[in-house]
Amino acid sequence: MTNTDPGAAEYEYEWQNPNRKTFDFGRVLGRSFTGIFANIKPLLIATFIVIAITFVISLISTDMLVEIIGEGTMEEAAVNPEYWIWTMLSSLPGLFFVLWVQLIVVQTSYAEFTNTLQPNNAMQNALKYVLPMFVIAIIYTVVCVIGFYALFVGFVFAWPGWALAGPILIHEKKGVFGSIGQAWNLSKGSKRWIFLLLLILSILGGIVYSVAIGLGAVATGVNAFGGDPMAALNMSVGQQAIYNLVMGSAGYFVYALFASGLTAAYIETKIVKGTVVSVGEVFS
Image (cartoon, rainbow, N blue to C red; front, side, top):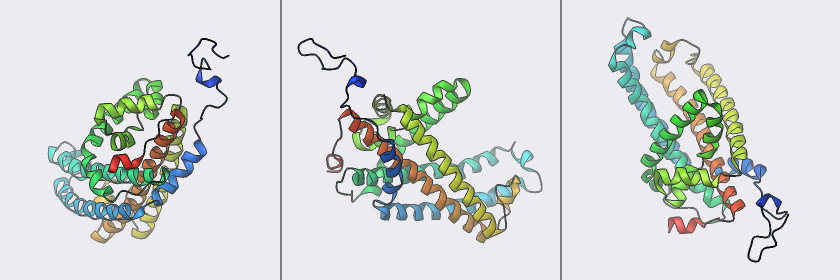
């Protein structure tokens, strides 16, 4: 029904408006892939850099872990604090690298989707937001994990409800908690579509990883994910290099896919709400 009060909106509820804008899920899903290749040069450079650095870190940490384990077992080494220190040191840089690559794609894909100029400093600009994005990622992960195990309904809402925080952090500069809050508000009415997007991308990511694991096993003759925790630690330098290249390439493709998809979803929600901004305002 429509309102008859002077000055009131024509429709009492937005869903009653036949001309309302709706979330175009097909467009968002398609853009998840096209956005990756919009300006692929900075993505390729960043991926090469992080794979190379990760490989060096892997070599150092593997040598240290082998030394710590010695003739004992993985279970015995697990009580040694040094084991966990080196495990963390080998894993933590990778998270920062992932966020850096994703924040690059958030910028390049946004420019592609809005038909504006590509940023010339996407890699440098992304570095400025890695630390706040890291804080967002920690909060997001903790809440989603707790929500999943304690109350599944909480996870269902938190997973899509805060997923747009990355693009908001970059393009609206609202800080950690401002980005999380804006993501929740912006996703209202579209959470089911964002949830579906995340689910589909997660499935595709799992397939890509499975193929990469298979290719790595075939190329090296070692199944590092076959259940033997020592298999990865006993690989030669050449085998580690192959595994890092295959798994790293697959991993950063998946991370870029998520970044592009969520950037597309971010733009779509702003289109629905009629609040699209120009990327030129952000990088001027």
